[in-house]
Image (cartoon, rainbow, N blue to C red):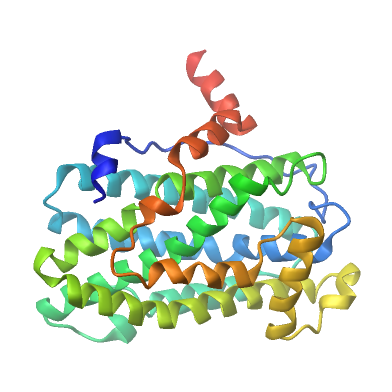
Length: 309
């Protein structure tokens, strides 16, 4: 854990915000089907992925000897679980507009089932189970690196402000990404804790190997989710047949044009931080800025008002 985190002594809390998308238009980023479907891709992959992380982190709890880290892990699990719930509500918004997503979601769920406690159904010894747990937490840390970069982009660029997007969906995405910045260090801290103080060199080599797999798989998964949605939208004809490379290139074009999507190349560039031996996510975001954005969220304000009644 970064020493500055202990000095800040910030504890994570679950904000059980609620969202109603009954009045959200199909293209909630106005007049921009490409940006809408790219951001909507997270509604498909995040619920199953975040619940997978919650299960893995709950399995790790008995091995945590640091009480502050234990509290952080519990707070992380509570936040991620509610992220999954909120994006499941957003899945209903997609079904409302007749997007066929259920078969795709079943396929994603089956994939994540293969990398649970017993990978591919294998029976592991206790020592291999522990090693596999560190790998799963390492996968979570690698994914959290990207969600932190997305969160920092969202907090800095404020992409869906100035009436360019539906307020409700914009609030969901901004709330979620702000919490990603808030808890950006937890997965990495847990990974390093499980690897042990005397195994820093091994932990470094293992997390680089993990990222070699996670970076292309995470990118491909987002692309597949985007493609699944775009192919069902008659207003997205220019993008329906985009291959992976062309879609990634278009993120840079759209980012430069409207700032409403992150640039893939900026995300990849962020890996120059990950490869440093002294990397720590604490330096990749601003907790104070995340909390300021969270306090301005209409959904968080409504929750606070409800609690005070």
